[in-house]
Amino acid sequence: MPRIRRDRLRRIAAAGAGAAALVTVLAACSKPTPDVTVQSGSTSTVVKPQTYCFDATQKYCHFNTGKVATLTVKSGATVFVDVPREVETKGWQARSLVSVGSNKFKAVGGALTSSQGVVHGSHSVRLDVPEGLGSYYLVVTQQSAGAIGSWITRITVQR
Image (cartoon, rainbow, N blue to C red; front, side):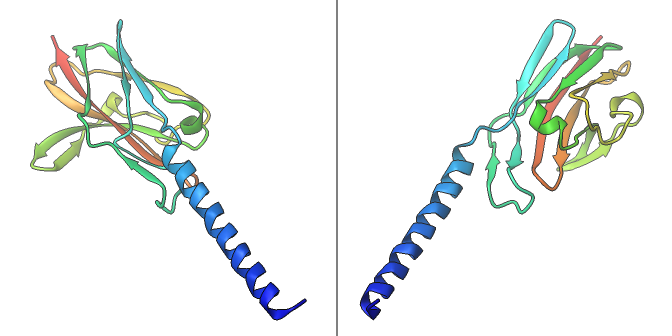
């Protein structure tokens, strides 16, 4: 095969590989992110992820700069957290935090955290709302070899 033809084939192959890589990147950017549902009583809210990376290398990530989801609940009620299959199969955790200053948070102990720690093989947990707490943040996190995400809901407790 003449030298010019081989060089041309190499350039075509390199351009094809570059185009394939670009298609992969664009496909990850347009892929929908999973939503989490948080419910108490007859009120529910669908929570978009604050951050979601489709791979653990954090190359293909979505960042939500919108408002944090909110849910008003009754003191002593139960909060139901439901995650989609792609989150369930990779493991996830629900934690409750209170703000203790500018960008500082403290974990709320007791029933406000998924008692199993990291949840595997279940798409939902029920968490008890404590008596007399004004508001807190319910944070659902997923961190695995396959994906990383966080969903935040501000829970306002009414008596």
